[in-house]
Length: 301
Image (cartoon, rainbow, N blue to C red; front, side, top):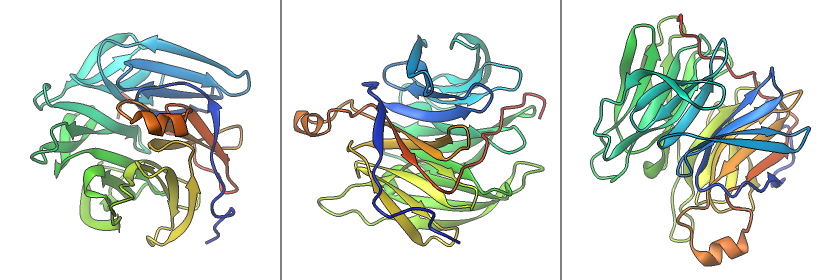
């Protein structure tokens, strides 16, 4: 196992997007473009790094995550449920309703598994009762995989598809499950990483991705940095971000050696935004160890 880079190499801003709550970056290999969402800004966005251009499409409600759909379009986790969207973010069909109270719950982090199922979790907005869940959507319908969660986050798969990572952000914990890529079932949950907050550091694990060596990259919300962990849970490197609230990473670029990062600006103190004026932007880091192509959501699975 190699580190693959120098510790403390920083991220740099590649798109001053001014997002309220940027999230769910996903790289389209076919288009060589990065899709991402602004949850509170209610938009689906497309960034073309080669051209330096970006587009945004309004969506009708809070949108927590998006996955590229086989045949075109997207599957998106929204407040009301999991939806099929067309290529410009227009809702086409409700695939599964959010079974929780929409007044205090919305879908948050999500991604396709290697077989094409879509996994997505919810967020318990009051952070009061651990009422959020992690769900799996396939042709059999919606099924709960885990419960007792405050904010479902950090979904990522090992390169062989047999390990699922999943974080509960407010509890500062990343879990690891045994995952059956044939059935989509999970078992044997264990703590992978638990962070220890301090009075000055409330950095906690948000969105994540796994590279081709099986290492887990996690954005630390309110921590201003991204960490890379070995499959053993050992911390390999840490990379500062010129924004206090990084939210999720995704591998992209022609060789999947660019690590993109979304960030947030909504609700942050004025002093913080003065110090980090690119908060809400898209950032990037060149890495030596590439990622893996993002699976497409397959409605037939």
